[in-house]
Length: 217
Image 1 (cartoon, rainbow, N blue to C red):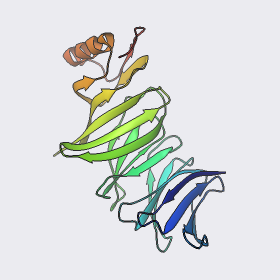
Image 2 (tube, one colour):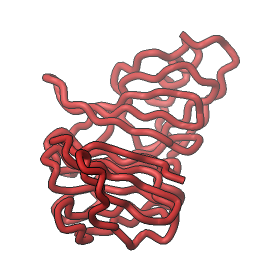
Image 3 (cartoon, rainbow, N blue to C red):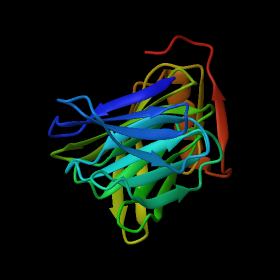
Image 4 (tube, helix red, strand yellow):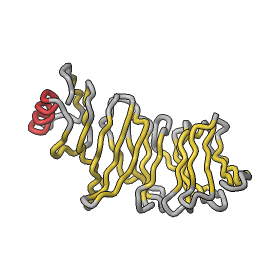
């Protein structure tokens, strides 16, 4: 099975990720098979090109993200830290960072070094999709997952590194908050909003699950 396909930014190459544990590169015009990128030990379910088109990132059910040279097919970095399948990977618009998701986290990585820059936690179920957008007021991630929610996160950087600020969340029954900053969160029911305000006041636990039986906005 082929789980993910993507065009290069120039449109001249296609990368595909498959259950045969490989990423394959194809000439978009001649349809000829080029390099076969081998190294993953389980199915490859997400592939994406860097904005420059010089690198490919792949996410796999072997819990890793791998970075490949798009021209030579050489493996450049193996990013390890996820404890479950990596469902989605995305480059920042600048191409200097990557976001990946799969277990109950989103991880931010430095492309040049392969270092993990930050871990966004607080999801009650697996995170299955992530997107990255640069706007005039800063950088944002959008996440979707098995908790039936869509959330936007504002990325902030200070001397201690990157932090994710929960900015907006769609309706869902349970909201889990851990290791995230809360500033003017939108899209919440009155019950969840009151509980979040109480959590900010008390701040006496590392993780809280807020159940809400009312209708979400």
